[in-house]
Image (cartoon, rainbow over all chains, first blue to last red; front, side, top):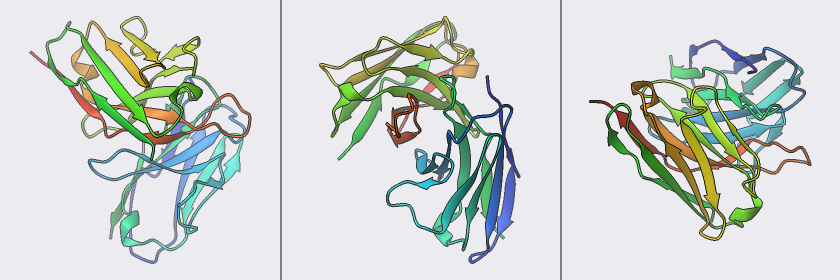
Length: 107
Length: 123
């Protein structure tokens, strides 16, 4: 199975900060990469797919980039509602895999 | 409005069985691939299983292969997960998730998720 590695595992940031999370695939996955946001006790929410396409209704402060094996999720100006855990997921293979998650906490 | 509602979770002893259901509404269920994803307490997301829109193509994570069976009934707009030989490490919230049909590629991200149902495997 394709292994997805996120970094960092957690980070502390303040409202208004620019935040970047990286995701690396163990083999090339073209642009078949999605990002999800999950808040405690809630189901994950799709933010970005195809590495850089914003899902409908997602604020434009979220952006994604990358292809092949290296990807990034950027939050340009962190808002209070953005404190959550973020996961990357590859859908290049039928055996889908998620990264281990990055928890964004309030500094 | 798209809705996915899981049910069937609960407490089961190791070695036991459980059948989860996911009732879908608000979209043409028979046109979408579906998946099960689980999340152990305090842990990350783990994909469990995939089923194509017709039910003809199925995949499982290695951790559940041979023990879990995914199925669907398009006439009832329902997705199922039969879980046998349950282990303590299967304890998790189980989510059903719809696969988004993105730009011609056979696979897609998960655009709608249910609220989850908790399965606890313990004696």
